[in-house]
Length: 437
Image (cartoon, rainbow, N blue to C red; front, top):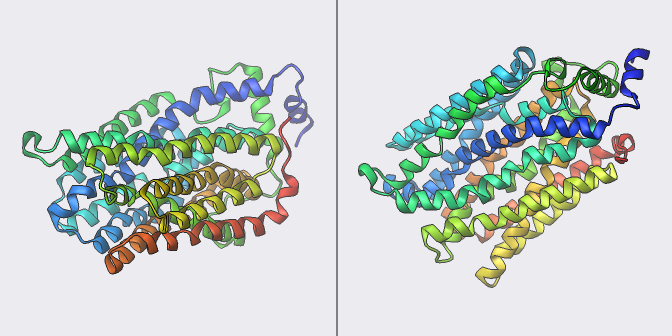
């Protein structure tokens, strides 16, 4: 790092926390809203399945597999998408992603057969590929490492909020729109929940800023400090090579670790409405009850990420909540009452989502800024393969046994795998973490 950059990064007249807060207030609200509608378009299939499966004759085994086909397209195109975004800029690329997935999500309302459902799930995944890892990478262009877990939580909180807020909305649409204009409620669900993503894509094109150097909403002094601070954290010799990232043992290990927590996250998300419906709840009540685990998950994610930032520690913060999620899933598998099952499912959701910001902060720290260009996308691609495996596994076990108990127990193994691997990889990285002052 040059003396000039060192001087700018240590400028005593700059309040670093204030600059980061200014960046966060500018970028996070629109990114959170975008991820919220992305996650809603991704998992609203769980609510559509309450009536769609019967109408179209889908079995549990087929539904579990076909819903997860989304992640085949998602994983195939994710790393290339991140690489393109790094080259052309976030403003153009994120806008393209959002508009294209919105169009395909709306077309899903027209499915008529197993084949049409599978094709559109694949295309939806391909269209959305790169959004989440792209934003995670984008934030490394703007947020210093010491504040990153907290800011990432501000973005990733859209995962539990997508279910906490989206579940009641989906329940209301299914209950009130069924038969309107001669269309089933699940068709209206797909169509209406796709509109916001297209509108937000257009807004992102005009609103986002690619790099701090282009941010006219920061002062020149603030821009200089932020760029110098981020340059200070960039390790020497970092790479941007696509193929090298694919062969990096750190990336592959972290990808498998992410697979474990996502196995629980999506295995639960795609089936939770049907699990709760099995308690005897109405469609409308199912929408509100399904919001409870993720409302608590959003709170846990926010508080836990702040604890991670205060202590400058991500490894044990990730492992602890993964174990909590695993215990919750195992407890829900054989809970003696519906109330205890809901409590256990709430702990499962809390553990699964609270691990996300600390996990990704650890990844960007372990890889370094340049390696993260492709590394984050590769990790996310490997991990999201469990978005196919988790729902499919639940469908297979449910179809074979007629119950969800054994399926939830199988999902519980995923977060335990994540905890074990993150502790192993973290041995060489935790010494570089520093508490936030």
